[in-house]
Amino acid sequence: MSEIKARTMNCGSCGAPLEIISAYTKSMVCPYCDTTNIIEDQGLSPAGKMAKLSDAPGIFSIGRTGTLRGKKFEVLGRLRYGYDEGFWDEWFLQFSDNQAGWVTEEEGECTLFFKEMITSPIENVENLRVGQFVQVEGKKVFITEISDAFIEGGEGELHYKVIPGKEVLHIEGNASGKLVSIEVWPREIEVHTGGPVLYQEIKMNKEENPYN
Ligand SMILES: [Zn+2]
Image (cartoon, rainbow, N blue to C red; front, side, top):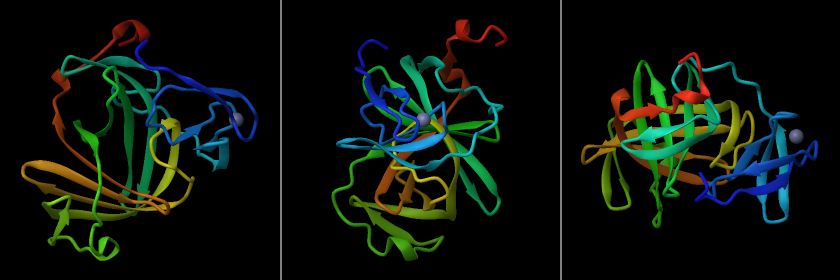
C-alpha cells in the first residue's frame, strides 16, 4: 500500500529495526524477540514479552492483503484477549484510505469496528452493569456484555498501548442499530462502533497463500 508512509523504529529490547505502517499504531510486538514496544516520542519503549499466538483458524493472518466492501486493506496486527470463558482475537486492518479498523471473527461471524472520537466523559464507566444504558457521545448505549479481560497475546502492530498481561475492562452494547465496544485500559479509554460483515464482502488476495 504505497499511499501509507511507514516509519522505521528500533525494538527497545533487541534493537531490531521494525517497520511501522499505520499512523494509528501505538504499540508493536517485535517479531524477533516478542517484546511489546510502546511508541513514545523518543522511540520504542519495551513493555514486556508477549506470548506467541498459534496460527488462527480463520481467514486473517499478519501481512495478508485483500479488499473489504471494495476497499483495500492489509492485516497489520492481532490482539488476543483472555477472559473467564476463553479468549477472542481482534485483527487490526489498515485500509488504503488510511482508516484503521478492527475485525473480530467468532463462531463464523465477522464484525468490523471503527474507532470513535471521544470528547466527553463516560459516567461511572468502571461500575456499569449489563442491562443498563450509558451515554456515550450523546448516544444511549444499551449494555449487553461486560468482561474483565486481559491481554493474552498479540503480534504485529496494535493501536492500543498494550502491556502484556494487563487487564482491560471490555464493555459491549448497542445503539441505533450499531454495536458499540468500550475498552477501559490502564492508560486510555477507547470506543469503537461497528457491525457485522459477511464473508462474501471480504476478498483475500489469493497469491500470498497458494493453499487457499
Ligand atoms: Zn526485539
